[in-house]
Figure 1 (cartoon, rainbow, N blue to C red):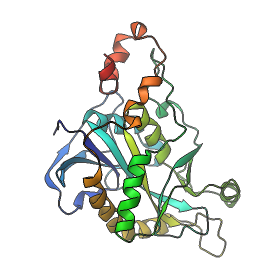
Figure 2: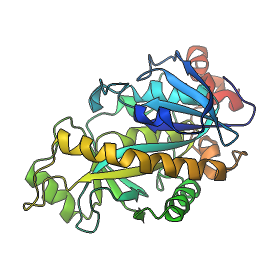
Figure 3: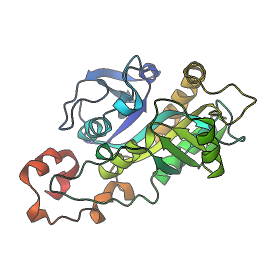
Length: 289
């Protein structure tokens, strides 16, 4: 399924496939130069827009955070003309004021991962250094904030998401250090998605669904997978409602700053671009060739 009007990507859980009102649903297996995405991508029409849903961990939650092929996921969506991505993700709260089942819309990231190669599309003869001071699309985040408020959702607009490796949850010492640093929520997956989306000139924002207090709050049970998934199930309907409210508000013209992020990022002279790398990155570099 392709569309002349730029499309919208949703990265999250497979439960989002059952959103009410999705028409003309189809399942796509997308090949990329970076391997296979996490799963098939589900396409459909929602409020007159073409939307593509990708389950981050695969249907049935089969992939751990360090096993995710972020490059394949983002590249596959970009090849489907996705220019806006909304990420739905589970996070732990690092501050008292963010309670389980609240929603936080991050505005910043702090990187505590040990991965680097899979956080960029570039290399192999083409160097690029994107501006990432403001890693979240402010325009898309504002749409999500307005949509959540219209629904009466307890939403916090802004905050710092610290990205750890996982798959184990934090130790108490790590959790306390993250709190002292002033971070707001913690997760294992969203930062690479944001970096790669910026390189692919996609506007991205995140709906972080708070599931627990990590392990710093000693009067609460430490976070466990069971706790996380219980709250995720409860939050699924909230996420669907926010998406349904937000999607009609997303512009059809990709003219935000994120959509021209490579204008000031590419440093290798185009005459020196290896043909193989130019071809490999065709979905991203098309307007430069």
